Length: 289
Image (cartoon, rainbow, N blue to C red; front, top):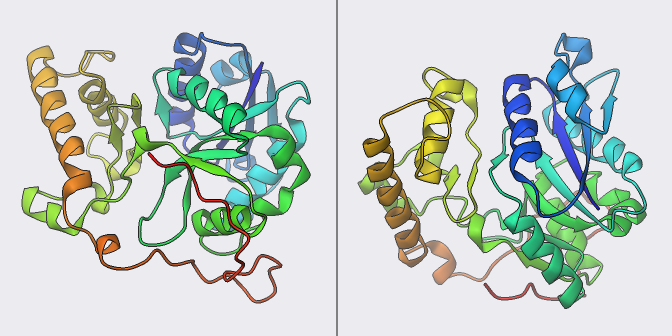
């Protein structure tokens, strides 16, 4: 059995779809779903469909803010992960994943390669790891809760913590690159310079508040990502055409010029009071793509 730690503040419509997809399409293993929310004080209540589908719902009395609130959700959630779940999927409510194939792939790789964490490289020019979708060893998370005690850039904090401890981590290449090369602006840069659809991963990560028509537009973009009409939105022929275009763009992206070709990867500076220092050299490199 694998644990899923799903965190949310106010994106309840996103959350309902995310949970539905997990229960509908994640069939390769058994999943213990823990939903942790810090939205009740602001009037954001969990949908009844989520309560019915989750194995455990954890509702926190207050929200500590955007960045610290994310840390709050993660640190509270790991306390509720069952010990019998060797691995845990960390997931944000707005990250829709239409298959557990990647979960299974990286669970097996973590075990085979003695690694404790797998997620996408967040920003290529510095050491950083994405938190919207990650697969990690449960015992490591529960034994090292300080990995989520971030007060600055969360993606760099987590990566630096792993590197400082000499822990081995893997890149989920199917969800990379996350940020678009600058030269893509000539192709029509979208979504604030980030890729939010990953056809090889069967994953979309759009923020509905940034989309015209909100959830309906995200459902259409999910159809495009999948190349099929999963949701009753959009013309099937247009969806297939846009899917091919998306796959071509994602295949091209790794070969477009970017600064990391000319500069070494750098650490993100961490607060002086943090025990994990940015210049720690006890590092095990991630496995190559």
